Image (cartoon, rainbow, N blue to C red; front, side, top):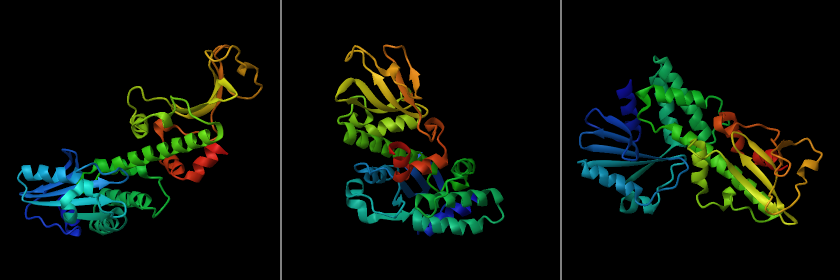
Length: 311
């Protein structure tokens, strides 16, 4: 089924090969590379990331240097948009644009009928179709994404398709970054400038959130914070470790008396009397270190974030 499936994919994007193809993932930064003799099919998968300068030009040059005589550049996006001129350069008219919404959705539907006698593959394709529906706003259902990922990675019959694990990761990063931007904008609008350690004041905010999602070393804490103008010894903050939490902290360098211990409110307290800070969790608990598909979907809607964090 693997060869038939690969050929079916290629025929639907109007690529003909005379030899049995070999499929490579992440070959020299190329998302998907299909080689057959002197023919190369380069698939660049763009879900949300921006084009890099001369990206497609570089891939074309790599294949030329490796002896490919015919090079197909496939630019795969959610809606079939064209690559930027800075990425494709003079090759822009040679790039074939393919969309998840129309092309891949059509291919999957046809492939499901081909896999009628292969139950595991058929199930994987159905789950893959569900995820494509989500990415292209065909449906709001994300209940089976974890299962989709495992099925896609388990069966190499799907090597003809770009990995959706990367797409899932990017959705997670984009949602969390948008959440922090919303928090930062609302805090600045209400209280003024954010503190230097706030995410919005950092130069590479997207990389910072990506490091947290990828669980890299020293990436546990992200925060947005603002000092109170009329009481600069106190800082309002929203932080993220495994969960999001909010509170007030006291800076001994800017004040002599910490009045937080005297606040009569059902907040959690942390630290000694001099450096005590009070904090609590929002009503909806989200474990960002083990975030679920339902939570990712929830965060993808701005209205949900506003209701959860702001109101």
